[in-house]
Amino acid sequence: MFCIRKMRREDVADVAELERKIFTDAWSEQAILETLDQKQTMILLAYEDKKLIGYLILYYVLEDGEIARIAVDDAYRRQGVASKMLRELECLCEDNGVSKLLLDVRESNICARRFYEKHGFVQDGLRKDYYSDPVEDGILMSCEL
Image (cartoon, rainbow, N blue to C red; front, side, top):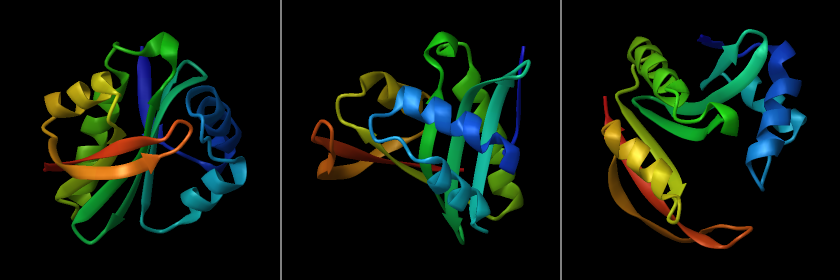
């Protein structure tokens, strides 16, 4: 069974390790620490026992929140980890006055797009050549809470 909790400074190395495992444009430990230190940021972690299995990073200003990262270890995908993090995020958003979530997703990432649609996100637009390594369009999505 996994649990969701807010990130602490001592979690930075674990998040950076999972970040490198999942993303070709991985954030450094320093970038993760700087993100954690920002006032208008929420970072949730999913742990099973003492192993980090997922995380979610959100920046927010007034009523809008942008999901910058949502990641789950390959071995734990399709087990409800990301869904549970999103549900917990929605509760935190309500407490902080955030009423709309925004995100970008690679055009080719059909699984992620379906996941977001299942959670109420709709496509708002397209960002041409938004991603690199490889170069790809980004789909803009949003969800009213």
